[in-house]
Image (cartoon, rainbow, N blue to C red; front, side, top):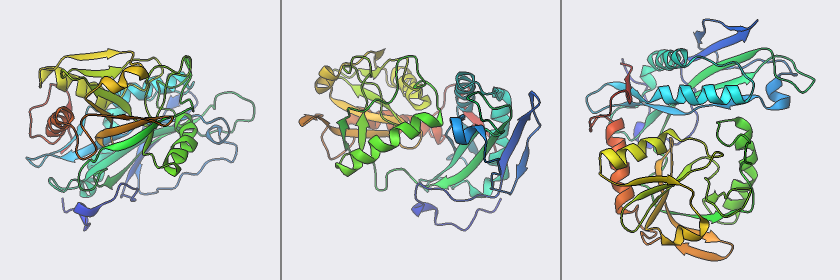
Amino acid sequence: MEKKNLDWANLGFGYMKADYRFVSNFKNGAWDEGVLTDDDKVVITECAGVLHYCQSCFEGLKAYTTEDGHVVTFRPDLNAKRMEDSCRRLEMPVFPAERFVEAVVETVKANLAWVPPYGSGATLYIRPYMFGSSAVIGVKPAEEYQFRILVTPVGPYFKGGAKPITIRVTDYDRAAPHGTGHIKAGLNYAMSLYPIMDAHRQGYAENMYLDSATRTKVEETGGANFIFITKDGKLVTPKSDSILPSITRRSLLHVAEHYLGMEVEEREVLLSEVSDFAEAGLCGTAAVISPIGKIVDHGKDICLPSGMENMGPVLTKLYDTLTGIQMGRIEAPEGWIKKIA
């Protein structure tokens, strides 16, 4: 298929309307078959549940052109499972995992002309999302819902390579124990907008959120999980019931243990021990790994030994291995790569 006439190598990380999107509606207790449409407009009642009681959740994944020219996506079954969990927690009807994966494949196939070529550094970002669409006045779940998938080509999250960032320990809370921190609900991200903008105004790239109960344990940022490398080369990642189970983080743990022979550990990470780590980073779909050079804890600088110039050597190996798997340069574990075209 002939590609769109875009400057693939210079795409930003933003929205660009593609040709088709997938839409399915839940009504009278069941999902319809769903359709692909070229209409990008969402029309809902002014009283829709999503507008008043924030019944919405979403996912994020990417499609890639591999070295051998195939178009693939990465572990969409885990996105499907996570969205099922989000729906259950928000009293929304589950869009079945197998249908989720089928809809992702169908949507990407319809937009193959928008999938960036191999070597451009760009990818096709895939955003499945669901919201309450019927009118709700009383505080209760909506009765009707819409599930949609949009796609948009995006450039690399970091132009010119990933440079270590400076983050701060924030006094704001991202999630409460037994709350919604473990699901990908829109309301979680709404809560994080003021703290992240405040961090930017203060000169920081991100926030480090601590557990809201004791404020002693590292949790995550507004949109990514933490990973740490010890001075003896072990990968450590925080464990908490209020952390979103990042697919990138879970994949990096597997890569570390089974591809690089590293010891890995998921456990509570105390803020007081962060200064003992050799490397630190944020991980997620958008950037894969964002290296951290410095953490500022209320005026106290915690400088990682890996420095502020480049990603540390262990995180670099993790990044290169995982992206190599995604791009087809390295053989993937069984079931990780979903071939689309």
